[in-house]
Image 1 (cartoon, rainbow, N blue to C red):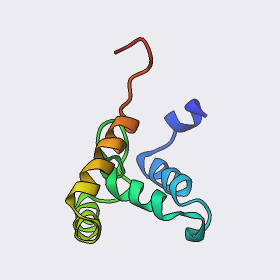
Image 2: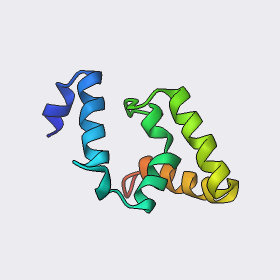
Image 3: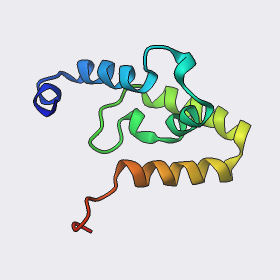
Image 4: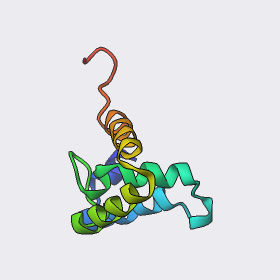
Length: 93
């Protein structure tokens, strides 16, 4: 899988990531999964991750999400997403 991913273009990586995130049908996504996706800036291309949505679209979605769930819940989800996305391997702390 690593070699397959390394050989992909950015566009192919975006498509693959979208397939992995969105599964085959939107009906498979729970509310919790959707909240975690909206809270995670890696989908906008943060860190080593390729963007699967442009920054402006991500920001607009997050602004709407914050208006619905509140800033505190969003910040907690954001911290969790960042910890998960950028967790160090054990022993490399």
